[in-house]
Image (spheres, one colour):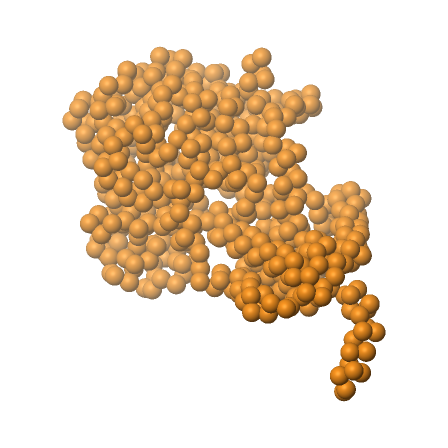
Amino acid sequence: MPVLQYESIKRNLRPIIDLVPDPFWWGSFIIGYIKVIAFMGLTTSWNNSWEFYFVNNYAVSSVIALCFTLLFFSAPLLFKGRSRLWVTWVFSAILAFLLFADLVYYRGYGDFLTFHLIAQLANLEDLGGSIVSLIYLPDALFFIDCLVGLLLLIVKRELGKEIRRQTPWFLLICVLAVGFIYSAHYRYDRVENGQNQIVFRICWTPTDTMRNLSPVGYHFYEGYVYFKENQVIELTPEQEEEIENWYVQHQEDSPADQYQGIFAGQNLILLQVESLENFVINQSYNGQEITPTLNRLLQDSIYFPNFYEQVWNGTTSDAELLTNASVYPVRRGSTFFRYPLNEYNSLPKLLAEKGYTTQASHPDNAGYWNWVQALSAMGFANTLDITDFVMDEKIGLGLSDGSYLRQMLPILEQSGQPFYDFIITMTSHGPFDLPQEYRELEIEPQLDRTKLGGYFQSIRYVDKQIGMFIESLDQKGLLDNTVIVIYGDHEGIHKYYNDELAGIQPQEDWWMANDRKVPLIIYKKDMGPKIIETTGGQIDVLPTVAYLMGIEEEKYAGTAQGRNLLTTQRDYAVLADGTFVGTSKELEDHAIKGLSLSDLIIQSNYFDQKEK
């Protein structure tokens, strides 16, 4: 074709060409949409994601995902020339990073990034190693198009100079996309009230909300909810009545037993052990006990083998809330970050009324999960963070458990008695990279190099330090008058690295499942053994311990959402995702309702308002 004829055709088609977005924009949008679908496959399952979006009657979600992706990429159309290409590339990079970060966070926490996490950036300093361990090499595929696009923009310096601003396309996309999304919201959320499909509603499981809205829509809606709801709310009279009725139905008329007030007036140590799961208790590998100290303590303990973690977005801090306040954590974000100054009828307050000195300690920064502010408001008269200890040995996230517990001994000696000390360990935090000199278990190299092998070694290390700590308490004359409650804050290997277990060979059945159980051990020297098979969870610690410490039930009956596991006739636990476990099926609706009511209790600072 002659050059002049080609230029003439090009000139005549120019108005039409100018109406169509450039190939760079189209390519970025299409690849972005493909990555969105791929992300959904990785966070559910490939088959489930494909069926959900393109096969079954929820296929409208695929169009919603398309609309949100179009809206996301519509802004670059307001630019012209090479600015259009660079802005498009920036949006592609933002989407890639968002999907990548969501995926990594999902692997560790079963949830996705939220605006609440912005307030939790203080945690990143200590969690770097754990975050890196959740990144897989194939994750780099999310960024390949960004790399190619960047190289193209650098090499092809003339590319895109003739591109014009395309406001009509921008407006058309906004009208069509917003129109479809709103019509879907009106039909499914309002007219059908969520019977077949939902759009703008928060589901119990984050993956359901994500699948309904797509990643872009999820974060748009989450941001809207955050700025709308991240305030102390005022309950309606109906909501207050609903909470009061729930507590009335929650009461039991159970007869007292021989454990009532058995530890009244004695010192109390609550030892929250990082990532301690129940499956390692009384278990051995190659003839070596993984937890010899804890196994030995069971001979003088009340042991609860059917005890579940109930933490949510706040993980470790949620465990602190559950055990000390006996309320479930909020459904979005960390309770300690969102509502750190809330009032609770907490264990430290109940014991303070009995003349106890109360103290909480972490071998880490005060800003980690905002624990100092939250636990101080909860009623602990004194708090100790990393600045109160000598950093003479660092393992993992911070001060080693060995050094930490050793330094706690003189502090406990000097505490006014009776005391309640809340002690949190850290060394067994993922990714379980315990230094070689502390890896005492003789494990085959191929297993020792895995996360499971590291977990066994880390738990064995912490178990030994607990044994040395208790022995020192005995030598200093404190153990005779002290009860020690030991429990895990949440799962470790099964929570964060469960997918790696299937690939470990040779494989043993006992380590394949833990079912979100953590041990609860209440130890008292020379007490003798007792096993309580009742199903319970971390929310039950306060009523159970209060009963043992001689605190009258009426002091906490209208505030504790948990049960006294020593006397209850009800067998259940509600996990953070709404799963009901236990045999008391007739109580399932009531028990699960406690999750949503706890949200109202915390968001309204209910107990503070009730006192007024």
